[in-house]
Length: 217
Image 1 (cartoon, rainbow, N blue to C red):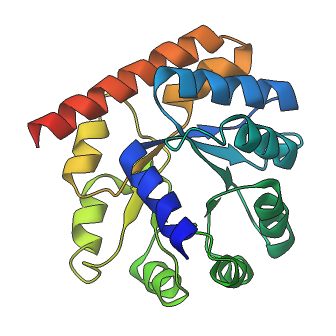
Image 2 (tube, rainbow, N blue to C red; image 1 turned 90 degrees about the vertical axis):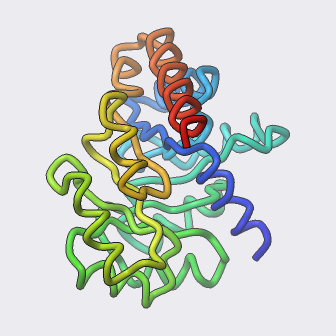
């Protein structure tokens, strides 16, 4: 169980998760590496990426000695995919929606589960099933006020907005009470075209903005 809490702490410390959807195995890897170089060291490797489990394994092995790097799997829709991700070394599992089978597997193997939810009913179902972090998805539609409202009936919940998080609204999400934030296109988007240097620059900007926000608090 200690590893589970270490993973959650690493995600919280990172503040921002880079949601990587690569066009190839190598593209996914290089995009993730570029993000880590820029200071955003929490990687959510989406299973819409080719051979995502191979990339997760490679990243996990390459950064095994860096306690700040935490690699997880995203777009996990079913139990077999969750199990594949865990075997590859994923330290957390993220889904666009709640899946009971995935929740049970994550509980069994003490892996943090972060399912996507968009209503109080879904949030309660996720929490009752042991979800450690509830992903608010799509964040662009939900808006920052959703976290404030959900924290009313669910003050114990950890919320992670994903979809629509940008450098411009990162402070707003964190001020609303987000546990952490998932950033995709605004952070790693240039990676799809092989512009890894820009991914690193974006990551540096997110890292610096997060540090500034935390310093103000």
